[in-house]
Image (cartoon, rainbow, N blue to C red; front, side, top):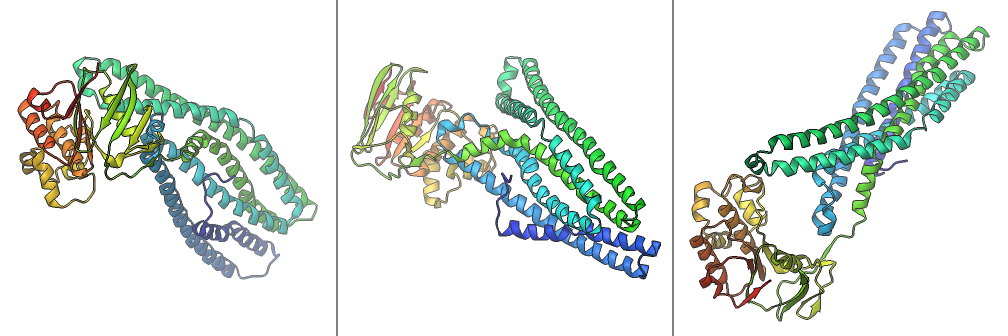
Length: 514
C-alpha cells in the first residue's frame, strides 16, 4: 500500500500524534451526547462544566493538530530531498547514454510534484484518516452496535463500487506526462536558439508549434482531472446514499423502538462524518494515487541503473592505445606521455567522435592504458581535461566557471588566467561577475578562454581540445596555442580543421582523417 512513505523514527513520532489527534471526533461526539442528555434529562450535570471541559479538550486537540501539521511537512520535506537526491545522483553518475531519454528538469519539478501530492501526502492522509475511522468506529459501536453496523455496511459497499476505472486514469496520466515532457523539451530547445529563430523569421511557426504542444498538455491534464472528478462524484453519490440515508433510517427506527436514545443517536450522527468521510477520502486518494504509477515507474527505473564506475589514473607511464572505427575506417591511435598530437579533418569527418571515444569509450574496439584493458563500462576521466567546441558556461560567477567550485590557490589560478590572456577581462568584470547560462552576456572568445582555463586548472595529464579557438582572432588563438604547447609535462590532443602552419609544426604528430 505504501509506495513512497518510509517508516522511521520520525514517521512513527508523527503517527503517534496522529493517533492522539484522531480522538478529537469521538471526544466531541461524547460532549454533544452529554449536552443533549442534559437537555433531555438523561444526565444531571452542570452544563457549564461540560462546556468548559469540551472547550479545553478541543484547545488541546488544536495544539496536537499543529504538531501533526509540523511533523507532516517536515517528513514531506525530508522525503522529497531524499528522493530528488537520488534523481540528481542518477543525473551525475549514471551512464551518459542513459540520460538522453530523461528530461530531468521536468521530472524533478513537475512529475515528482505529482509523487508528493498524490503519493506521499495521500499516504500520510490515509494513515491519519484510518486512525480517525478506527477510533470513531469503536466509539460508535459503544453507543449502538446495530446503527453503527448499517453505517459500516454502507461504506463497504461504497468501497467496492470505487474500484472501477483505475486503468483509464492511469492511461490519462501517462498521456499527460508524455505531453508535458515534449512541451518542456521544446521550450528549452527554442529558448536557447531565439536569435536563430528570428534570423530565419520563423517565430510564427515556432509559436504555433509551442501552442499546439501546450494545448496537448492542458487537454491531457483536463482529461485526467475530469475523469478523476467524474469518478469521485459517482463515488460521493453512492457513499452519501449508502452511508448516510440508510444508517439514518436505521437510527430513527431504533429510537422509535426504544433501543436508542436521541442523545446517543446524535452522538453517532456526529461520529458518522468521522466514519463516512475518512472512508470516502481514502477511496478518493487511492484513485488519485493511480495517477503517480507511471511517474513512480520512471523513478524506480532510475534506481535500478548501476552507476558508471571510474578508474582513477592520476598519470600514465607508457602509452594509451585506442582502436575505433570512424566512418567505416579503422583508426588506431597511440598516445605517449607529454606528446602533442594534432588531429585534422573536414567538418563531420569524425574528429569529435574520436575525442568522445577517448573520454567515454563509447564504441572503441580496444582501449588500453599502460597495457591495461579498459572495460567499456568504466570511465577514466581522471586522465583528461576536456574542452568541447560548444560553449559550456554556467549561470554563476567567472570564478566558479573556471574552478567549477573546487578550491585552488591563487598562484595556480593566476597562472591559468595568464596562459589564457584573461587578465583584462577579469580586471574589467571581477571574478565575482555572474555569467548568463551559456555565456550569453560575454563574447564567444571570452567563453572559450574561460573553458580553456578551466581545463588547465584541473591539472590532469592529458588535455583534449575540440576546435577550442574557433571564436578567437588568429593572433590571440596562436598565442594561447603556443602557451598550451609549451607545457612540457602535459599531453595535448587537439582536433581542428584549420590551424596556422607555424603552430602545426609545434606538434609531435599530425593525424589527418579522411
